[in-house]
Every structure is written in structure tokens, then in C-alpha cells.
Amino acid sequence: GENVEQHPSTLSVQEGDSAVIKCTYSDSASNYFPWYKQELGKRPQLIIDIRSNVGEKKDQRIAVTLNKTAKHFSLHITETQPEDSAVYFCAANSAGNMLTFGGGTRLMVKP
Amino acid sequence: EAGVAQSPRYKIIEKRQSVAFWCNPISGHATLYWYQQILGQGPKLLIQFQNNGVVDDSQLPKDRFSAERLKGVDSTLKIQPAKLEDSAVYLCASSLGGSSEAFFGQGTRLTVV
Image 1 (tube, each protein chain N blue to C red):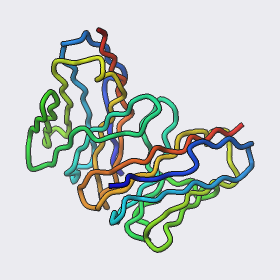
Image 2 (image 1 turned 90 degrees about the horizontal axis):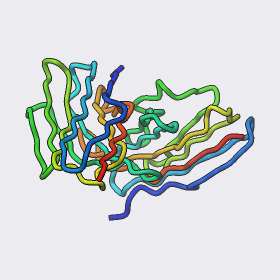
Image 3 (image 1 turned 90 degrees about the vertical axis):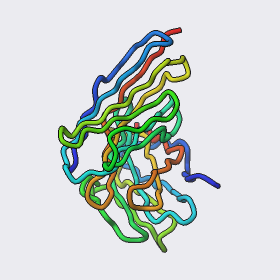
């Protein structure tokens, strides 16, 4: 089955700096890669996703890049703000559109 | 639109007892997932339904966990008997199917003592 690895597990940045979270996946047939944000005690919520027919997607301060050859994808957050502090999860689909999640990255943005 | 509904929000039981969780997905969503999220970890898929059929349950501990999705709408997840290591948040999610966004419910926080 699919295996998704996520790094780093924790990330601390100063407000205004950029943050980058990286994920690798194992199933070369995966074609959908969402990113979820989970605030303490709340449900995971989709912030951006990318499909395998594009290499990059951007939405305001958030961007995701995908390298299908290397089987890795990354989340980039620019101009970080304290409200960006949360746990971020990457995921990848596999046969039957099963969604496998990475272990999460705790992002802390220091004011 | 209404989101994914789960109940109860919290449950505390003793080990060896049984417990059941309920999920009502977003109307029209064919795919329903149950995830287990242990504190500090990512969600782990337990079972995935497509309408009322099981797509994958390879990570479901079938000796103690069971799930059903009657009529392809609501779903229940049961644990019998519970172990201490079952303490986690159980998240239900639904999607239209295919490569589409999965929407999560608030989850049920289970504590086994």
C-alpha cells in the first residue's frame, strides 16, 4: 500500500518568514495530493491540493509543488502569520482513492 | 451545506467494554472513511466505503473492530472489546469519490481506562 513520509515533524519560524514542509510517497500511481491544516482540538481542513497533471499550484500565500519523478511534494507558506500555527498533514491517494496521511508537521509561528 | 456529523463527541469507557460511533456524511457523498488519530500522529485509515461496499479495510483490527454503512448513507464503527491502546480520536470523512476533497467530521475522542 501507499506510504507517505513527512518532514519536519516540528517547524518553528518567525512571523513573516517562509515555511516549507516536504512529503514523499511510494505509490507511483498516486495522482491526488491534498494538504490539510488541523488546529488544536479541531477537525482537519483542506487548504490546498494538487493533481498529477500539474507541477505547481498557488493560492495567495500558500503553494504546493509536485515532482512525480522523485515522488515528492512540498507545501510552501510565505509571509507566515501567527494564525498559521497548526499541524499540517500531507496525503496521497492510491488504488480505490484511499487517502494515506503523513505523520504531520507542527508549525509554530513566533510573533 | 451541512458538514459531516459525528456522535458522540467524547466517550470514556473501561477496557474490555464495547463502544459504537456514528457518522452521517455530507448528502450525496459516495465515499466514506473512518480514520483513527492517536495523539501526535497523522490520521490512519481504518476502513473506506464506496456507497455501501467496502473498498479497503486492510488496517482495521477485525478481531475487535467492525464497521457498516447501511443503505450507503450513515455509518457506525464499533469496538468490542476495547483496549487501552484504542484511546484516540476517531474521525469520519466523506467525499464525492474519485480524487475529490475529503471533508472531516469533528471526531469522537475515545478514552479507554
